[in-house]
Length: 421
Ligand code: HEM
Image 1 (cartoon, rainbow, N blue to C red):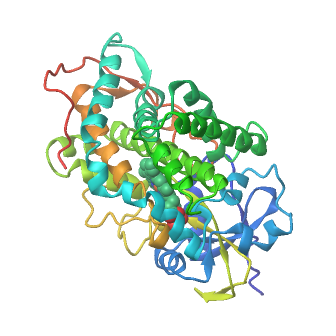
Image 2 (cartoon, protein in one colour):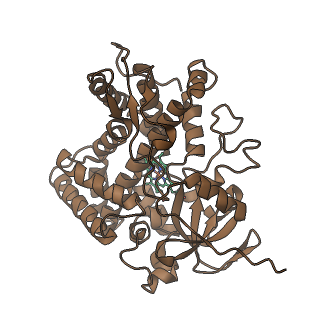
Image 3 (cartoon, rainbow, N blue to C red):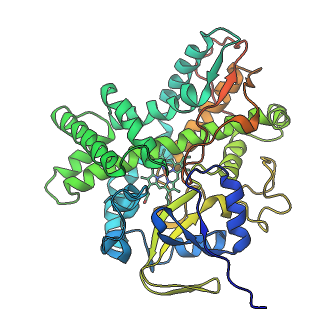
């Protein structure tokens, strides 16, 4: 009998079972064809070594305007849910020298050393939020996704970027839509509104510059050296605000969820069997905040993993699959275990596009998580683990709500909690 190749897997836009889908993809091989919304074809990369190889290969681009014939030919409909991911013009989608130019403009502001100075400010943000939660009745059920996991990154990124309060709620709605693969409104409208809000932000910071990163980028734009076009300025703001918000919300959300649904792991953490940093890294491995990353394109034919990726083919990075590599994480890749010998993961990417905000995301989680669990040591989930719904997305890997019963807070007069990193 002839062994017919399986039909390409159609990715589930509802993201109902990201780990299960990742297993299915990995079982098919290191590099497998998948169908994205709108019938768009791509290669899904499920193997960490193949991913690393492709991420540093000059024959792989993120620039759809130059290297994705399907997009250039107008075959990607404007209402495609992933349109914002491929059509923007910033470092995320730039190739070669353009990428270096755009990344250099704000890269230096995001090094671990530059980010470390934000520690007291992030500590104060978490203390303010925890004080607010502690003021609620002891038996109240709170949504920790909305009232904590989302608020920490939101307050940090809006302070860093100088986003005034009156623009924040509209921005949040747009960011949520961009990360959803079941959009509630026309994706083009979301994109247009996002750019419109950012244009307002730029106009205000131009008139009244501050020490924030928007003002820094405007100064690069306005210094007459042609280093940044107005469109690139707006789209870079879009990138940093979008990337800097929802991803970190998912990280904090997932870490809280893993601990609350695994009391044994929480007890081990408290007993010193592993550190908060190990918790953060294992969460990144086990439940990557970006489960699948759109998109890259082959600049020429590439022979890899016994397949030929043809020039112009689209490539999807499946971090959810690669992070549970059965060889690297033997014998139990599907177990959440912060004490495992290696918590290696690709959740921040690899190579020239490696996440610029990784030090900031790690710092936020390292401050926010111990502060929460120290303040509410007896906190419990207020829903069965499988009763907590996931986001409508195969990209964004988090929960819609995280209901928890906080119980009595521990009162501290010692100021913002420090992590044991
Ligand atoms: C847990 C939180 C985060 C995760 C999981 C995450 C993940 C990622 C991933 C997977 C990429 C793409 C890498 C690639 O294409 O190879 C990326 C790029 C990027 N991230 Fe993050 N990110 C997080 C937080 C942040 C934060 C807090 C910021 C900024 C405030 C940020 C800014 C960026 C930027 C600017 C890029 C584009 C880099 C480039 O293309 O050169 N990210 N991130």
